[in-house]
Amino acid sequence: MAENLLKIKRKIIKKVAPFFVSNLLKLLHKTIKWEIVGAENLKDIEGPVIFSFFHGRMMMLGFIYRKLRKDRKIKMILSPHFDGEIGALIAEKFGVGSIKGSSSKGSLKLLKEISKIKDCDIGITPDGPRGPFQKVKSGVTYISKVTGFPIIPVAYSVDKGKKLKSWDKFLVPYPFSKGVYVIGKPIYVPDDLGKEEIESFSKHIEDEMVKINDLADSIAGLKV
Image (tube, rainbow, N blue to C red):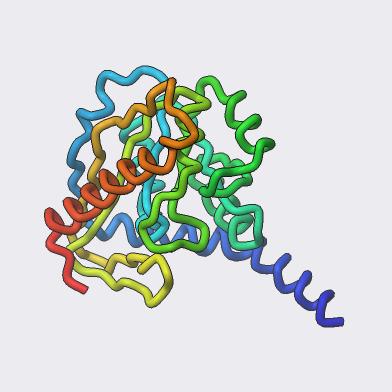
């Protein structure tokens, strides 16, 4: 009985949540005055890229993609669990596809699927889906090495918002605040990077992402 009730509950959530959440986000986004910093870092890149952002800063990033990459498509790597399924349905409302996977080393199946992607950007939260907070797992490095796509660190922040008491300190902007999107310089994973060097290079990516995140907070003047 309990299992059937859970299935019914999840089915209702899948039907209602994507419509409700996507429209709420669109309304919230329109009330915020946004600034974009670092868009020139994408200017000379013609091929696909990997947009890498922390799990706690994913809420408003769906809106910036079309401004940066008007004629391209993107797929987001999302958890195969129920929360990932909901995330995928919400992402669809913004024209974002999905790939089921993890930000850790990743399964051979996931890497094989990604290796087939030729003309599509990839989005990933390398500290997700369950943390630790702002710790980049090696999956993003493996994916960049397999595809040859450069990694673009991205972040957003606002002057007024709330950080939830979750592992990722998820940032929720307040309506009518001022916001900023920051796009970092591309990070290229060397073709000859060995297994023993993957972890240290992932730490380099982590450092760059933290810098971008901190820069966004500094420009926006985040007060929480």
